Image 1 (cartoon, protein in one colour):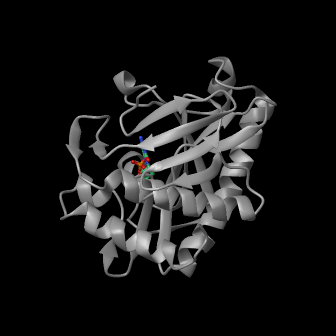
Image 2 (cartoon, rainbow, N blue to C red):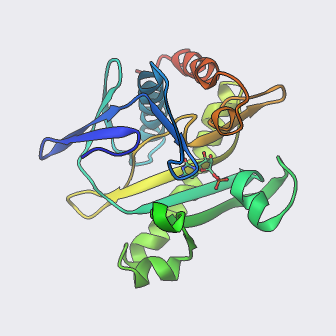
Length: 228
Ligand code: C5P
C-alpha cells in the first residue's frame, strides 16, 4: 500500500514502513521530493517511538532498518488524525484566533477524519462512533493515550532542547483488538521550536528555507540519546 509519504509492505504478522522522500502540504496541493528526507523521518520516528515504548506507551515500532525503513506491528489503521496541542499555532489560530505560542492549561485533543476531498474535517468523539471509525471505548482510550503521549514527547524533546508545540498521531488496532500508536513521529508531524527557530514542516509550508537542514538538527539531537 502506498501513501503520500510512505509505502507499507505487509508481511502478515508485521509490516515494513518505507519512508519516502516526498514532502507535501495543503492536502497534497504542495509537493516536493527532498532527497534523504525519508531516512531522516524514519530514524526520528524510530528513536522517539522506542522512547515512548520504554515509557509504557504502546507504539507500532519494532525495529529500525537503516536507512529509511521501520519494522512495525501489523495494524488496521483508523482513517483518523489525532492532533494534540500544547501551544497555539496553525489551524487552531485560523479557526479560533489567539497568538502563536500561547500555552494551553492542559493538552487539547482534536480529531480529524482523513478525507482530502473534504479537507480532513474536524469531528468530535460522537462522530467517530457514528461513522464507524472506532467504538466508544476505543475513542476514549485514544483520547487518553494521546494526552499521555503528548506529555511524554514534550519531555523527550525538552531533553533535546526543543519546545514541542503540537503534534499529529495516527492510531491502529492490533490483531488482539488493542489500540496502538502508529505511523510517524517526525518534524513532518510535530511543531518543534526553539527561541530562535522553527524545526518542523512549517519551514516547508511557509517557504522559510531548507527544511532538511532543520530536520537534520532534530535527528542529530535524537541520536545523542543513543537509544537505537
Ligand atoms: O495544521 P494544524 O495546526 O492543525 O496542525 C497541527 C499539528 O498536526 C502540526 O504539528 C502538523 O504538522 C500536524 N499535522 C500533520 N498532518 C496533517 C495535519 C496536521 O502531521 N494532515
